[in-house]
Amino acid sequence: MDLLQKEIAFDSCACEERIFVRVIEPADRGAVRGVLQIAHGMAEHGQLYMDFARFLAQAGFAVAVNDHLGHGKSVSKGGSFGYFGEGGARNLVRDMHKLHEMMRAEYPELPYFLMGHSMGSFLARSYAAQYGEELRAVIFMGTCGPQSRAVLAGEKRLADSLVAKLGVKAHYPLFARLSTERFNKAFAPNRTPSDWVTRDEAEVDRYVADPLCGFDLTVSGYRDVVVLQSEISFDAWFRRLPRTLPILLISGDRDPLGDFGKGIRRLAARLERSGCRVETVLYPGARHALITETNRDEVFRDLLAFLEKNC
Image (cartoon, rainbow, N blue to C red; front, side, top):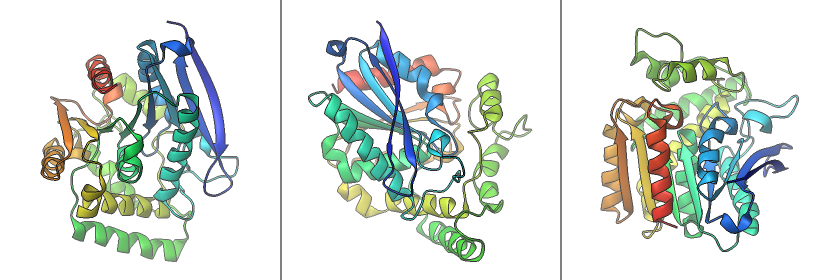
């Protein structure tokens, strides 16, 4: 099937940035049977999803992925990587909804899906609670389980104090030690700082060599992620999800963000108790970034099957 790939941009709802978007779709618009919007993870960008996007486009889906505010090509000259602007992660969700409206205008009658990975899964979870009635189904990939209220409160107090002391765009190494460095220790002895991302060493090396990947968020950016995790961990979020919205939880059982599968199982059980329609897939041995894992062909097929089932 012939494909069209284009790059577009729109004004962010915050700051003076333009949000960069990659779209890939069948050249024959009549062959399009659904739309998938992707929310990428922390300290990465949309280009990492293009192999998967091409796979889906060949199967008849239009795929759009934007670089979030503070990421990738959505950072202008003089802009700040890892800064989400005043309003924090809410800005990223609002930008995602602007992209939804743009793609919905292109394909008003087709089923619309949302997939988020890692931090993007947190954003997708927030989005689903706010705009879930507009979606046919959602995919939360490489997400986390319910988090401790006390731990999140402590992390937010620390981040608030550092923002007040250093400024919103400052960087502080403690947050990396609390997150990615801690995750990587589970795979010691380490070959790189990013062994936890995938078992595929070539993909790890590509990630490490990419200047748009692996950067530290600002102190306000880390605070915003903690606030986002708080939002999606507590009862109000579960109550706001549409009960008819199909949800796919997909993760590696060696992903430290998902507590090696245990957090994903806890999240699935909590969703089921809330009356949500949830499916769970845990891949043995797989780590965090499933679309670059050694079993990515299997992952691609499973994701396509979920979309086709819900078209």
